[in-house]
Image 1 (cartoon, rainbow, N blue to C red):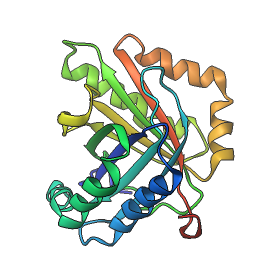
Image 2 (image 1 turned 180 degrees about the vertical axis):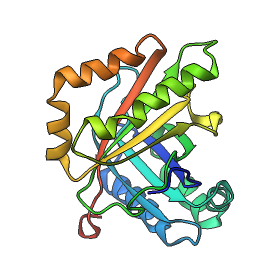
Image 3 (image 1 turned 180 degrees about the horizontal axis):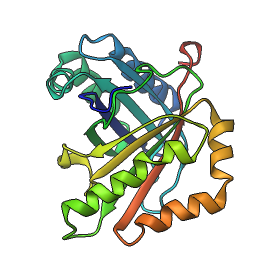
Length: 220
């Protein structure tokens, strides 16, 4: 696996309004997943969140996609099909949207995630006036998680480069597990989980963790 990467991770969190008809939610998810056919997209999947670890935000759905460069992400973002899906099926039914983009610290071993993969997205908002060395320390802790938690198939992390919709969260990571069972087994090692949190708690103002399962084509 390459130690350097230009792979761009793009994550959007959506909070659907509580009384929206389920057919409109299904249409949104189907149309978002359809964007995988756009040329710049290496990988794209969207669906419901299975768990949110945040008292501040309660997101209901998630989109994760990957690109070879920031230019490719821009091309995707400005594509008329993407703009149409957002305007017609996303914005009318969502009351909150958050997006974070980062350059993966390593090239993912598998670019396209298999259906059934369990995904944990974590965003950190660091306290103000912390230096670059602190950001590097926090990222270092995240990078080390794969070796400490056996069930993690791949993990990437980085600093957000699109602050407009990130709500002040600057550090992002994605951890991929073979399935929910493997994710829950990692969580069950409570002493190790606590130890990792202790390493960064003095630097972190708030955190969002969102769990998601990559849907199969038949479930879309």
